[in-house]
Image 1: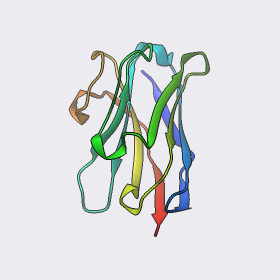
Image 2: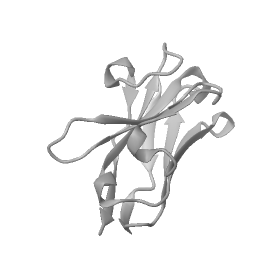
Image 3: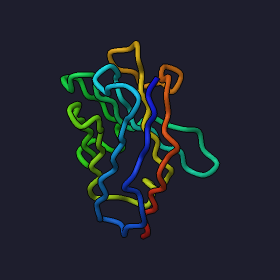
Length: 124
């Protein structure tokens, strides 16, 4: 079992940047495909990005392509989400998640472990 803790959220103006981190403990991160999801008030949790165990496969949702970059450092047991050119519609609670079976997965149902989330607020 792995425990996940997100950090790096905050309040930023439109056009600004934030870097989210997801630190894992309890088991090595390299055992899992890792994803970022977000949930805005009144909306369902949605897929943002996913990275395979070795980092060779990456997918993004269309709305963040070219602005967000997912990465991982298995030696540090940490995953990252660099978010640039942030927009008010990016405002949400961001969650990291670990999938122990899939190579990559875009559905929340595939993920076995979740962090508690970190709030990202983008003002216009």
